[in-house]
Amino acid sequence: MWLSKPRGAGALSAAIYLAGAALFLWSARPDMAWGDSADFVLSAHYLGVAHPTGYPLVTLLGKLALAVPTGEAGFRFGLVSVLSAAAALAVFFRVAARLGGAPAGVYAALVLGASTFLWSSAVALEVYTLNLLFCVALLALALPSGGAGRAWAAVFFAGAVGLGNHGTLAFPALLLGAAGLWTNRRSLPLVLFCGAFIICAGLSAYASLPLMSARSDLFDWNLVERAGNLPVLMSGRDFWVAGEYKAAIMLAAAKSLAGSLLSQSSILLAAGAAAAFFISPAAGFRRWLLAGVFALGAFFPVMYPTHEKEEFFLPACAAFLLLGAAGLGALAGKANPAPARKLAAVVIAAACVAHPAWLLYRNNRLFAVRLDDSPRAYSEAILRDAPRDAIIFIDHVANDTVAPPLHYQFIPNVRRDAFVFHRLYLAFPWYAGYMGERARGQGHPAAIPEIDLAVESGKQYPLTPEEFARLREGRTINLPSVNIQTAKIAEANAGRCDVLANTTRMFHNPILESTMTPLPSGSLFALNAREGTPRDESPPALASAGSLSSVFDALTADMLTERARHFADSGRHSDVVSSLSLALQYSQNETIHCGLADAHAKLGASAEAEKFRALCADWKLKAYDIF
Image 1: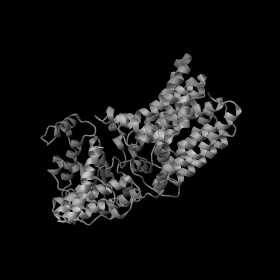
Image 2: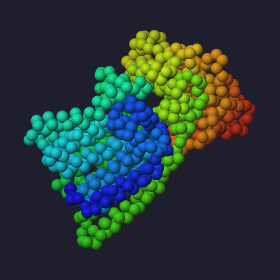
Image 3: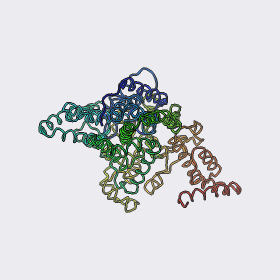
Image 4: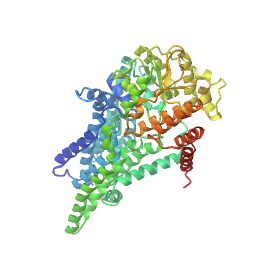
């Protein structure tokens, strides 16, 4: 069904917006976050081009947010996520209230706002809440429209504008667009012509990317001032992962997302979602549109190998809750006699209080986000420990992009002489050339040689058959090509400038082990130590910074574990114990416990060696998942 606008809907919508804004603003980050946040903030600050698909809309909105006169750059950019999340909640309520009545709409909106799906996205410096805002706006336009041409024109335009924020909006937008074409099929040629014009107008934000690319030497992903590169960026081809689309991984992702959704929903909403398909047959068009949005919204996070699955699943979560509100309202309306209707109203009112309160308690870790300054602590340690004019290779750890050092290098202007280089992006054929241009734009002496991988693939490198196939075929996530280019860059800068890395975990392969011997250097590892350059091997200061972030914990534990590996190779077993004992404050895993057992044994501390040997055995059992 599609109810008439409930009385007081405007006031309730405003109240939900203010409540959401208060919650999200209270728990907002003080500055930078992990992941791609630094890329977005820097692109907005310099009006550059972010990673695929370019995200021109959030770049332009972020530029406006950075003009706010208070707070750090990361906090100001984060206002885009905070305010988009609050606005999405308000629009979501309007749709839910029209589907199931105001009480069911309030309940569904409060559940969505306190869930990890929306709350974690609202405190991230990302594009997901703006994507949700466009998705619920499309539903608000499409669901009541019937055959109204103007409403469908607005759907086409809003969908196209929203694609300037995130490409996954294409899934619900295409479904709703197809519904619009079907309802206006009698004038299909005119609709197609006008729709194409409206969509092109909506996509015009992408026209800003070549202009941004032409003016920015520092942040210019894929060099899109060259006309042929823009479609590559917009398609996201760089991130099409080869060989990772496996049924077992997809099934595990589907189970995880379903478990998270159902554990944060309720029997009331789940029953409502099921009932929506059996009550009010006249509402079939709308309920099947919502079901389609749910299915298409769930498709990408299930299919694509990313750790940001809940964030990508956000539109599907909203569609599920809208179905729940529609069915719940219909069930309450059919309750008979009058005492049963009153009881249904009391149950929904009680759920409006108890369920969101429980979710706030369940997800209370998100309140601590406002205290998390670990990206700054890690970045400042990295930049502090780098010699002048150093190249700093950054590898990803904990399945997350380690981009904050780039942010703190530029916006607070901590170390403009250093050159931060995301090593794994060398898998993209154009990336080395882009980094060379950035080095020149930054005035850095780094030498980034041109490397012909077609020639390199014909040389004799110590590779497995699978690695050799990846190198020859130029597949994405091509670690052999990354390692070959790493060795060539380190060689080209020998005697020119220091090359360091934040971790050597991925350096244990024949290509790199045969060309360099990394040495611990504070919180970094020196790859091509120049003669006469002092090497500080004291324990890094960042280990005492404290953490509220699993990424920071993983990075710190990894760095301390890699230091211990180098100390073990040098026979410095006391240093191994010191480093791994510190690592235990950040992580508990097999590598740390087994390393401590070996080091204590070599130092003659048999009791400690036996203790850690037992812990090592326990962790090995966990790894094999015997129980």
